[in-house]
Amino acid sequence: MSYAQHRKIIDADSHVIELDDFLIKAAREADIELLQKMDDQTELPIDRQKYDDGVELFERRKHDATVKQECEDIIVSNNLGGWSRIGAFDPQERSHALDLFGYEKQWVLPTFSFHQVAHVGDMDALYAGARTLNKAMADFCAHDDRLLAIGYLPYTLGPERALELMKQGFDDGCYTFMIDTNEPNDDKISFAHPDFDPVWAGFVEQRVPFGIHVAANGHYEAVPKSFKRNGKNTIALGGDAPAGELGLITIKNSAELFLSALIFDGVFDRHPSLRGMCMEHGAFWVPSWLKSLDFTYGAYVPRREFVEKPSDTARRCLKFSPFAGEPVGWIIENTSPDMICYASDYPHPEGGSDPISKFEATMEGCDEATMSKFYHGNMQALMSLA
Image (cartoon, rainbow, N blue to C red):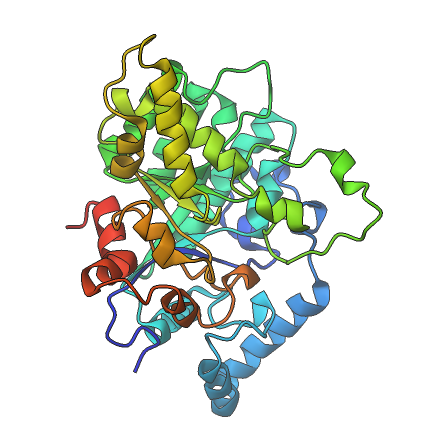
């Protein structure tokens, strides 16, 4: 029996843990020289020992049935490094992992390759990198329609180039894209500016939601550097999770600001069918955010027109994936049964071990209909699959 057992599940967030040649294999000849090496990015340092151990274990799984079975038996355990987990970097093995999990569909996002392309200063290099990343993600998922490739669409390129990149990414096979929650250049326009409407319309025309994900934040700094000079050593949780307690408590800041801007600046008014998925920013903050939206609405409704209450826009248009271990039942009770979605974050360490058990430990008061929406129905609605 699969890990999902009787449950129908769409996994809203998972990742590929790339090998060195992930981008090179997908690159167009004109783009190769503009790509930096995976080791050259410094945002997410590579542990070469774990990398080598993972490649070695993958080869052993291919040739030793006992080793393969041992890895299958602990697939929901987070004790192995990312490269060592089944399907971390091999597309065919990823399909086998999906069989073991029993998920109906799985969104698949990049890890190291995102950092290879997102932190370059040159716009041509950024364009080439994102175009290559999108092709690489699409290639990884192309053999299995359960795997949905989530590319990267850097709006900082400007509306025209972003739209061009979007169209190419869809043509290459991406399901949709994650976008930055912040414009890193203070001299450029907001992503909520009407000039970006053709790009937002592109999501609507394709009938897919946009995605936002931790780390894709346009170099947003939630914690001023002075707070890090506190006489203590910062404890890293690993993966894309921000380091230190203040990093974790502010993990949602850029997402909260960005989504508020989309609502108050009228993006959802101009594109009422637009939908969005917020991944790996947690969901503990969403109840108070909904209250904050309406408090702000109350202050400004005498001064400007609103199509609807901002919290109604958020409930209608947005979904959120919590971390395993958050009080999901409480979050749903104080938001809506229609907003919160299951995500494994496999094979990242932040996903933890046995996420289903951790989620359900906090959902004892949820009825069967709410559980079904959490695991499947909300993602089905978001993706227009119903």
